[in-house]
Image (cartoon, rainbow, N blue to C red):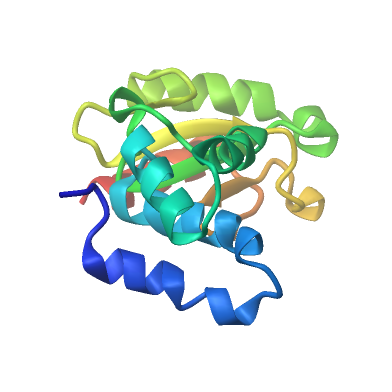
Length: 160
């Protein structure tokens, strides 16, 4: 028995007709697995490769190219992912101080999840929200003009 459920395998297969080659489904497949399991174990890489008629190293290469994906269960994501942007515009408007505040408030360093498993704190080089610097990406939503107080409010909502 594999790591991927039959439902998840079918969702990956559903992408195949949308692309000219199966290999192009690698990234969407990784996202599906990562969203479901909160990390991508080696066994899942092998199962994705089998579905897409690829060698596991091809799936692994795609996954490691993007720093978005977590590979180990110990690094498994929390329920919510909070990225603090530290691009130039955000840096000039206090991103490093905001990162320090968030790490202190949550009791974790960037790249780790809180003990309750609700929040993974990370930093990004740019999230494309320079007009709202310093900005945060909460899962898939931009949060603009984030102050330490605004971050505290955000964390309180996420912990409920």
